Image (cartoon, rainbow, N blue to C red; front, side, top):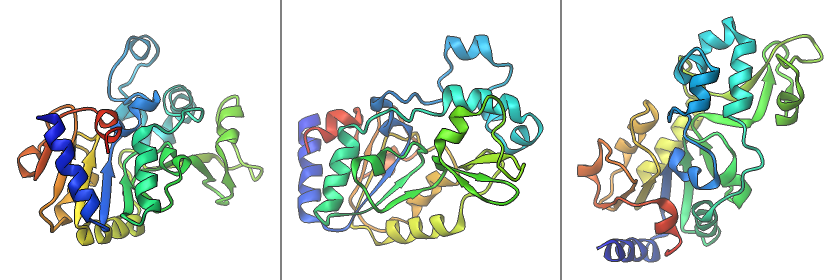
Length: 239
């Protein structure tokens, strides 16, 4: 049954030159980057607040030092390597088949694999800006800071990631909508489709070849034209 579904996806891909991939945390878990929503023992012992609270705009403003303790510990995995899913998607783009990767991830692994048209809905840990003068800093500035990273002007440096309570970038969203609405094949992978407004973007897909690849159940399972309940690596290694 799984083989049949993967073969069907292969057929869709072979006949299409207008594919868009929409992905979430499950794309990067096979690179060793955990989904921060999964609560582990270390988190229980070390932090007084749930991740959603710590990764909110108001918490960042009020408790910047505690924010950065969690952020360095849980959100930065700059030594992680691209996995088979990232690599295959980059290959499809290079072949002219994949037009865009729309990702909820902030790890930069799609670019590391060679993808160029990557729309990062939630930003990237690799980019950081001074909140005062807007000077750019790379990830090393965050890692090397003893406490709160500060700019040479004295301002606080903030990661270019979308925190809870913050809106998505309008330009990135409009590009994502445009890409998804023009797609012939939409492949959705490694996402529970429960984080909004990002998950709502797949509503703009107008075609009849929506493949949904995810280990667990999602609210959109019934709407998928092809539902594959398996790990992304298991699927993409056969494409």
